[in-house]
Image (cartoon, rainbow, N blue to C red; front, side, top):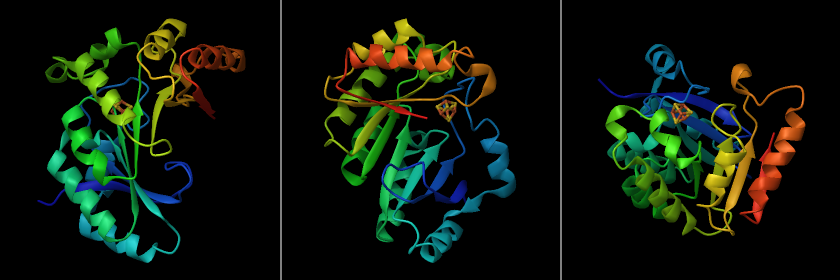
Amino acid sequence: MLKRYGFLVHSLSDYPGEVCSVVFIPVCNFHCPYCHNKTLTEDVKRDGLELSAIEVYLQKARKLISGVCISGGEPTTDPSDLMLLIERFKRLGLKVKVDTNGSHPEVVRLISPLVDYIAMDLKTSLDRYPQLAEPAEQTSLVANIKTSMQVVLQRAPGTYEFRTTLARDWIDEAALRNLGSQIHPSAHWYLQRCYIAQHKPETPQDGEIIERYLAIAKNYCNNVFFRP
Ligand code: SF4
């Protein structure tokens, strides 16, 4: 049976500077409690599209979109499938962005020369990463995250970002300091709002908390941005 994917024809918020379609890989090796795609696997079983159908949509939308964001799930869980998607979307003349949790640095290294943009999540302090991952992923996980960071950092400015969702219980001042100490001062690091109600920073002062978090991140990195 041919693989199916989630698909969003049109997005203004998933690829900086581009109008893109989004392809969702319905498998993930993490189980972040605040995941916005918890029902993705079931949704894709019900409504997913095969690659050939996605290509038909992309051809039709070609005048409206300039890129494709391959998101998830975790795109690096199936490297050959990821390579196929990249090749087919590039063949259509589209820019390609890949979102990753950084758990498979060998795949991040493999695709880095082939894609136009990589967004790597920095989810929590490194010592807590194993709490987010499937057991099979936990060996070498912290080393893998560090290696992926190094691979992503080798990209040109404007072709990558690190991003941290401000999810309560996973990101606090200590976690930001821990991540900040790993990040290069020239890196581009986005702190982004968490929209899952029970995982947002405490309200009603979440604006103050976000300001504090930004100030901490800026101690480590010159290019820190907030994504509302
Ligand atoms: S890595 Fe992303 S897709 Fe996977 S569980 Fe975490 S938030 Fe969800």
